Length: 197
Image 1 (cartoon, one colour):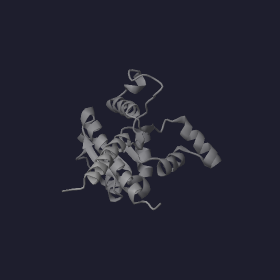
Image 2 (image 1 turned 90 degrees about the vertical axis):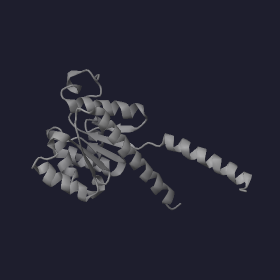
Image 3 (image 1 turned 90 degrees about the horizontal axis):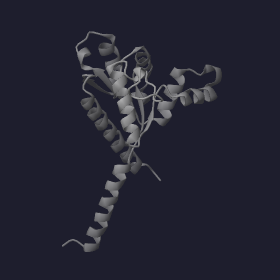
Image 4 (image 1 turned 180 degrees about the horizontal axis):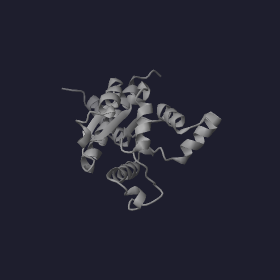
């Protein structure tokens, strides 16, 4: 028969692990077509296409769930870039710097000129690709395009996750993002457990 004190202690550790897991969050960067979080979800800029609506909903949902969510539209990123890089500061450099140093999970919706450019600059950086989930509209899955034959192959080589999902299916997008974030959190917890000190 197992020692009662051992069982009691393990029950306590089990409960503590469950509570800590519930609180575990990571810092997220969500890239996609332009949104304005200072406006309501119903504002025209946040409703201009299906992916602006979805991106706004994801930002809102993850913020309410307690994640720290960054967007390329964050003015503070530009301010920090100006401090760090002076006259050489630009969106490419300060976003890459921020994602490399401070982001645990990067979710990208290639839908619009700006995010195509962002994704192209990130695709050749292994340290960023390892953190990245790219969700492409399902209707483009079979396209003979630079996206599929260039970017997708490049990011997969550096261990990015790539999914093709109908952009009209927000529930499937959210579920896929949730699973990706859960995996990233598990990986961070494992690394923390194995870290010296």
